[in-house]
Length: 365
Image (cartoon, rainbow, N blue to C red; front, side, top):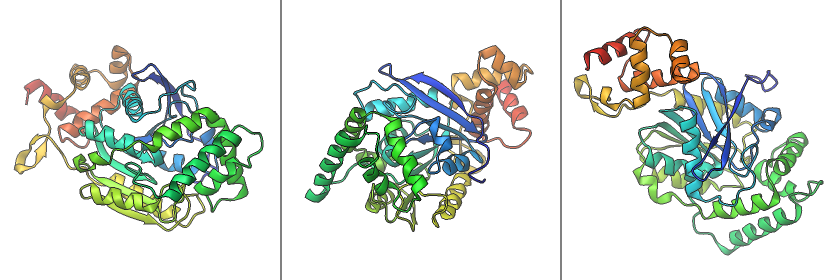
């Protein structure tokens, strides 16, 4: 899909996290749900005009219903926040997927979203179908003195130049993220930094992210995993990708021949990224749960959530999806997602899935 195509309609919604912080999230596209655990520079409204991000949004939404959110303190989410620790960030992700009505979904961890996605998947393995790490990491590994000095320098640059009208200081971050960018792309990312959050939040959130570490949970992950990373990434070193792939069982590593942390549309690595991501998200997901005919594994009626059983019971009364949505004060799309989860858990496919699911409910088998 061309990056100059009209932007799909997106719905912007709000939910509250465990500490009351209001988190903004957006939904666009159609198909199986894909949740994007966002990087620290995002703005749900401005990203659609971006020569840096727009092609990613279009690609994700081409075959999926995309749910993405602004991190606390950033974009349209509550700005006046001081706690950016790993626990509340995991709670933010939990709040978004619950408010969106998602029972099971693919999860794409962008950059600093890696530790959050790892914690979430370890705690809710039944809800994550596939896991993708893009330019990400599990936790900051031990650093040599030079890297520590670089962190201190970047912290000082944020304090001095983040809010300035000119982009001299912010251009350092831009050059690290997209060294292969055009001037138009550099200018846009320069401005996004100032637009997305304040200097105080940028410093404090960055400090707390630098100590976030979920590497001890990697061995617990039992979900199809793709690790995709640019070899020349200057924000998160490629060694982070190798560490992820080596410590998650059966994870697949794809190295992109690029220096861009955010792969740009005219980058030679972009078609590779598109093909690898599309192929991975289309692969069958191993079924978990009870024993299926033939010795495989599948889930049964006992594995349906209360909401799924409620919706299936209304379907058994002959109500269509719109009628069910009105009855439960849900969107029709949310009803459709719940039914898709029902079919997946019962290992039902095709046009007869609804009838077969209803029959299983009525017979209790």
